Image (cartoon, rainbow, N blue to C red; front, side, top):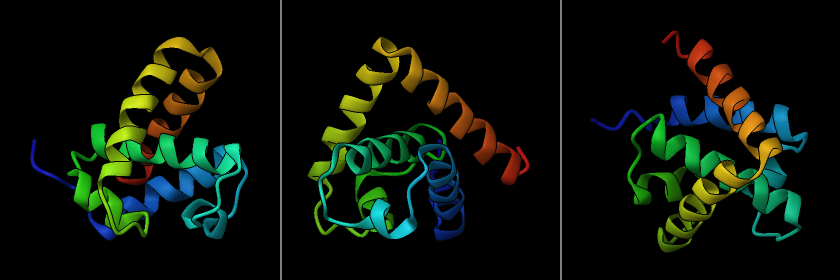
Length: 105
């Protein structure tokens, strides 16, 4: 699948994550590590990877990160989390639904 992880599409993901996780854009893109911020970034990374086909460097750029290796870990942990935790699975599904609606897919 070709990447559609453009700034506009990534913004749709970030907006949906902000709404579902109840955090600000600044918190989402910050380097701070409260668990709620890390959780939200993990969901954002997973959606950008799986729904937008973003490469790890593209996702890192959209999240304001210099290194894509952290994104690789977030996506891996996110996949496990969504499989094992019903709340995370429901939030992930809701984020995907909001993003797809906004992108008209």
